[in-house]
Every structure is written in C-alpha cells, then in structure tokens.
Length: 188
Image (cartoon, rainbow, N blue to C red):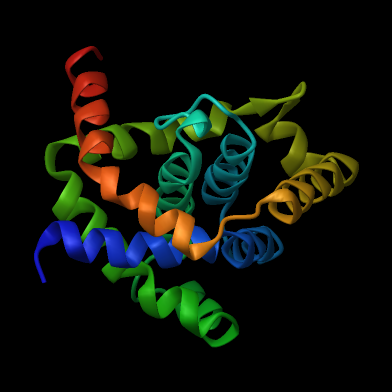
C-alpha cells in the first residue's frame, strides 16, 4: 500500500470515528496526571474542532474534517506520549484509539510530507485557541466553561453525519488537499 492509499484508508476511519475520538480527548482532560500544558493543547484541539476556518476549511465537506482528526491525534499524542505511564493507562481505557494513534500519525506524515509542518506548527498555537469568547485558560480553570466545551463538542459531533460512501468519494480528491496545504505552507 502506498502512502496515499494508507492515508486515505486511515483517515476515512478517523473521520468516521471522530465523535468517539472527541470523547477520548474529553476524558484526557479529566486525567490528573496530564500536565496543564498538555491539557491546554487538548482543549485547544477541541476548540479548533468547532471552528470552520482551520487548515482545511469545513466548506470542503468531509475532507474538511481530516485536519480535525489529525490535530486531535497530535494533541492526544502530546498529552499521552508513547512509553509514558499516562499512555499505558489511557491505552487500557481506549485501546482502539491508542493502538492506531502512532500509525495514523505516521500515515499523515508520510502522505502530507513537508506540509505536515503546518500541523506541527499549529500544535503549540492551540494553547491560544478561542471559540465563542471561551479561551483555553478559561476552560482549564472554570468547571462551567469546561462543561460548556463538552456540550459544544457533543452537539457538534451529534450533528456530524458523514456517510462512509460520501467520505470515500470525497477522498478521491485527497490530492487537492495536499495542493491546498502546499499553498498554505508557501504563504506562511
């Protein structure tokens, strides 16, 4: 399987699984062993999921969810690094997600090549994410803001209806996604 096929295969599943993966991210925020910096990145990944104008605009239909799936995986890998006690504990709770985490990221790096730098550069910026006036720091310190975030992402995921067939059709244009990201990389 070449890099393109591997990416398409993995991210068709990742986009379909996005609602469950969002729940994993929400649960990471309740892990007291995860430091606040890592939690901030997880919160930022959830806030960015709610934004229409991210690396791949949501106006691209199902393809617009690919960057959300990648960003969520990067945030989870940052919060629960491979080989850490946090990763071991979280893998017991969410075996399917964590078993595929590193291969999913490797597939994204393999296919997106140099444009994956956009995702790497975005990760620390997630600490400053904001949506509807709610910032990362507010969500971390205020239980009401955290509840608001959980409600917002739950509603967004409930409203997300992507049929696998539609996603497979959209993924035929995955090369245009690469072209789009190369343009963004050239203009940064």
